[in-house]
Image (tube, rainbow, N blue to C red; front, side, top):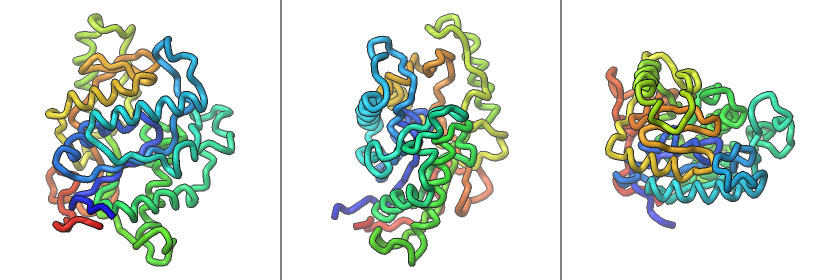
Length: 298
């Protein structure tokens, strides 16, 4: 088995593109520093809306396959080689937006048994043995069913992976030292949209999104950790641009299929949801305070 580096980061996301928007700079930074970065994506985003007219024919499984290829391109931009689909590509289907009939599809992630899906993730956790897990809060950042389910599955898997009596065939038990939720401080979002207002007329987008359209916006007091990804701004923008069916990037701005402009944030923020915080000040390293094994993991 290949030896893994001493620092290991696991991210759990709902669809291809979520990782680049939320954590692209963080992923690029830690990959460049030699940490092992693992991304688990829970669905292929088969129900996503398609931006480019030339790709408008894509839907369902064809769109999912295309988005998986976009994800691979995005990971190349970030320098991340370990990216996986939960349970294998297509195991769990996109659930669509909350309240739609898509939520009732028995194949969709929203309908998945949480313990069953968590078991798929336990296998990854015990293989990679990450010190740090990044995922969404209890509302999935903005209420999308797949994001909420990704939170539930990630948190449940973290618990199960640490249980000595659970799934011995899945590998040796492993306790994740720190679990973070994706966040954006409200003052940062407000400042970004204020800057956007000044240049909106110069952009190819007809209008601006609102602060509350940004997933995970919270009071500044909830932020425990910030990662300055400024040196990796170009990598993040390129990774987002690789998800061309879903995102149009005009750096340092972008828009989703609604064509509403948003700031592209290169400083990324987190709330420590589980684990020991390194001192009272805001952390600048997700691995702060974690025990690192210099010999790595086999």
